[in-house]
Amino acid sequence: MTGAATRGLLVALLIATPALILPGVAADSTQITALMALLAGFLTFVEYNSSFPSIVEFRDAPPFNRLRFIALFVTVVMITQVIKSHSEVTLLSGALFSLGTIIGNALDFPYSPVRLAVLMLPETASLQLVETIRAAAGLAYLVAAIALLVFVLIVRVLGWPTRHGAFNVWVNLPLFDPTAGGDVISRLQRDARINIALGFLLPFLIPAMVKLASYLIDPIPFENPQTLIWTVSAWAFLPASMIMRGIAMNKVAGMIEDKRRRTYADAETEAGLQIA
View 1 (cartoon, rainbow, N blue to C red):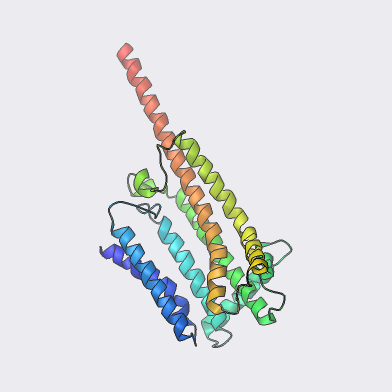
View 2: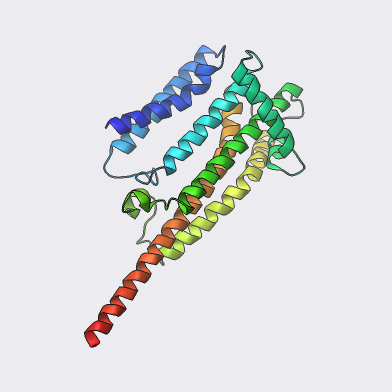
């Protein structure tokens, strides 16, 4: 229960971070943020306090979810500091804005994800808003790339997910039904390929979807700091998260295949000994 409560508090803190850091947040926005933070924290507490999994994947296979949470939290904090630098310059906010500008300018070339993120803005966007979203996109992309690299190293070098003990497929993949039909290994590998492919495509698809939505419905108000923070964070975090999920599912498929191969080998050895 203590671990579940801690996770719930951390998720609530993540949701409330922009409102806590940014100066001059409206009272109505603060109340909505507080409500969403409490709801997210409660749902996280219920999920981790339950003995039976429901939604959260790889719940008992650390540090998968911890790494994703840290990446999202760092992304939100850094983008919030970038926006804060326009109204209240501090050493941290100024340094992050400069770093984000350098990375964003380096990645802002034709057809790049950062260029497409900048093109999400309406044509009437101010120069300050364009520079802000470019710097935010650069920082978010950097954090996502580092998180992805760290996870690959954990899988390849540290032997995730079996280094902490046995891996329970039912607990860690509650949304995956092994009895739905077809070979489990083939289905896991197919889902892994789909997740990895979508992860690479989403940085290009999300800006196009946002632009299309602005034409069909209403333009997204990127002038609102919290809207900009969560949009850019989702733009960078969701693709990295899907690629990590694909890598994890492919690893699980490999583990099942290895276990099946060893079982067959042991059975053949036992049968040979009985014949002899």
